[in-house]
Image (cartoon, rainbow, N blue to C red; front, side, top):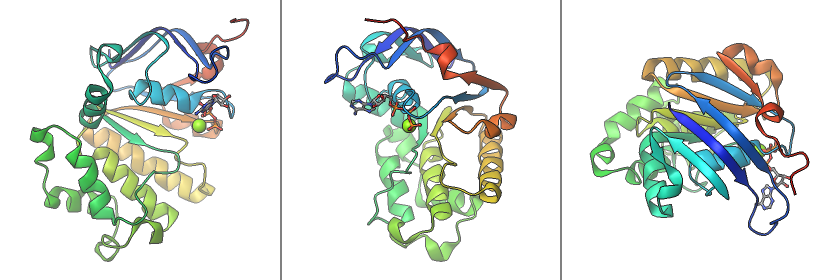
Length: 226
Ligand SMILES: Nc1ncnc2c1ncn2[C@@H]1O[C@H](COP(=O)(O)OP(=O)(O)OP(=O)(O)O)[C@@H](O)[C@H]1O
Ligand SMILES: [Mg+2]
């Protein structure tokens, strides 16, 4: 199993009585493309942060590629994420004053030495494959268009050849035409690299791209929890 949650509960530390997540059981198998949808404030980003080890679950176990995140310290989780999970953040989270190449080099440095061996040629090949033209590689990220920033964010998520790609509302700022371009690009990257995909969004019209569509409400049972 690629991702497995068991009796996971989560509340933010400063709000101990307010459960955001209560997930008795949920999993994703290797090679699956899963779409989890739910309304704003429903806990989608929180869920992705737990799965990627950015925040520990309050209770329960999160197992990724056979490894239990709660048995790792935060440094180990960071390293594990860098090696195994590509994360395309909702707002991309690029470092605005660094150019595309440097944003991606930074991600590479967080991976283990073996993977960090990926050289600049690999970064350039990836950016080319994602159709970011060479003249834009050295512009600060803040001077790139939204569509270009997206490509850099995907390249950054892929540079360490993760087995899992997770994406948080990556299409929310795009019009219909660009949304379709983005989703097609994402799907071809997933297929070429044999990755598992978990994407969260409130936009149900994305459903057609996935082999499985889950409603967060059905997974997350927070009603009546004290
Ligand atoms: N850092 C935080 N501290 C305290 N509460 C938070 C924090 N981040 C999110 N929350 C709360 O947790 C709940 C879930 O938020 P989350 O961001 O996971 O929702 P979401 O489904 O991603 O929403 P959106 O679709 O708007 O991105 C919300 O009630 C939110 O107020
Ligand atoms: Mg969110």
